[in-house]
Image (cartoon, rainbow, N blue to C red):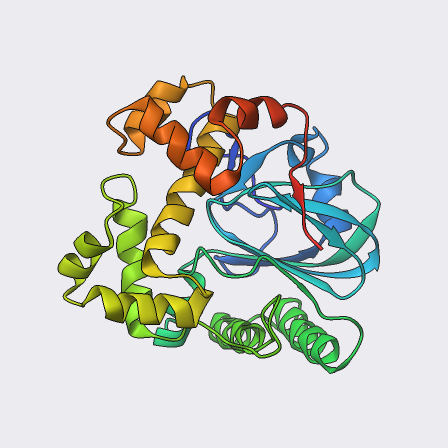
Length: 301
């Protein structure tokens, strides 16, 4: 990416990008465009599965193509807004088919208010929004334009102003309607934020909602209410979805035997893992692994 290839986050078999932009006026953020990005990384790495240890926001302004993130392929056109978070597995389309403003930033760069920390820590937030060409697009484009103006300011760039401008952009994105909803329902609860942090820490250890409730000092009912408000899922559904996603990543991007993956995700028997995986994905682990050879993922409307 506009960052150099380096020690990435996640599983070793998946190439990783560390944050190392070639010409950044301040550390922790870079503004570029997709054309420049593909012009710097010409070895085809971006078109293969990879992951990055930083956030990337892209507003598509020209052309159309697809972008794949965690086994979902998103059609992109002018007005498409993509937010890929650290650790998510992604693959770019062939270069030259679309262009847009591309913002890369480390998790620590934005102003660390409670709301911003919640947003940057939210691994389950929407990847793709279709803004069209109306008011949401105009406002998002204007905020990106202000960010770019400060980033390229000839008299010198202010890190503090960039952090505040980026925070304003993220907060604006947070109040946009979520895909599949008519309103901007968002995960604003401290309960959900704490649960999400614990889930990232413990999803391979326990899938019991009661364990998360005990660790966090809430009731299962409280956790479920917070999860439903944020994602439309119960707490158990959220836990299982995170385990299923990690299972898909390991099956698709490592050569580890199914039995090894089952143990890594806390299953005592491969048969139990197989039943779990089939129930949540509609296919067996072996069938899913075979289906991912040379594919780009499931399509998203």
